[in-house]
Image (cartoon, rainbow, N blue to C red):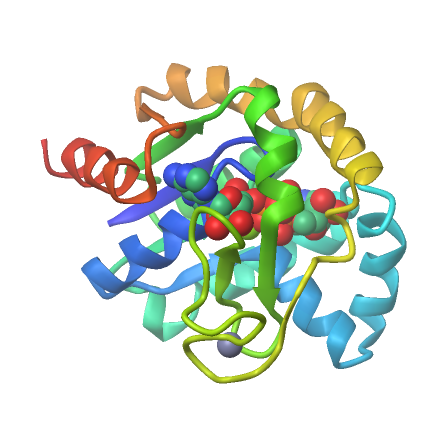
Length: 214
Ligand code: AP5
Ligand code: MG
Ligand code: ZN
């Protein structure tokens, strides 16, 4: 099963993608997580990506497309994968479509987790992430068992560098200008499924499983 998670920043793509990946035993591929790991490790890619991410802008397509095409060609992706945060522009989507077409394949589902902008700012200001294992929490909606500490690995959880309110507004603008057109792109491919992302986390998950198994 090859799935794309679409949705605004903070819509819950990462939260849901991890649960879907666990349920179906497929790799969860988040370009945001890959860039953050590179920043943490001080790589060349990380240094380049950071200048864009801190401003709420997209990392250029040429730094992103090859990375994903390479990742989905690995052995663990042969039974499927879930993409979270990619594609984010029409050129990225075309690059993905072309790379799969060369192998005689195509994506199966593009799931749009729909959340209006009004709900987003509150979610982002409450989000805490573990930079060690990638787990995500919300101080009110989805709190860790012990305040400030990751349930999964015991390390400290922090506010993401790009979750300051001003940067979140910029990311929303960028989403509407560059990423939202993908909804029509995948609707035209006949694989778009929309779920109401304002429901509680478990209800969103059930909605997604339902569209995948219908
Ligand atoms: P990325 O890491 O992908 O960030 P994003 O798309 O802005 O999305 P987020 O991770 O912020 O939100 P999410 O939808 O995963 O929500 P989450 O599950 O955490 O990208 C970051 C940056 O990297 C980009 O700005 C760009 O610079 C760069 N980048 C990445 N990919 C790129 C690409 N392909 N091309 C170019 N640049 C790229 O949930 C949010 C919060 O809400 C959490 O606190 C969570 O606990 C809570 N929550 C989740 N679900 C619910 C619910 N149902 N009810 C209540 N609270 C909930
Ligand atoms: Mg995410
Ligand atoms: Zn952790």
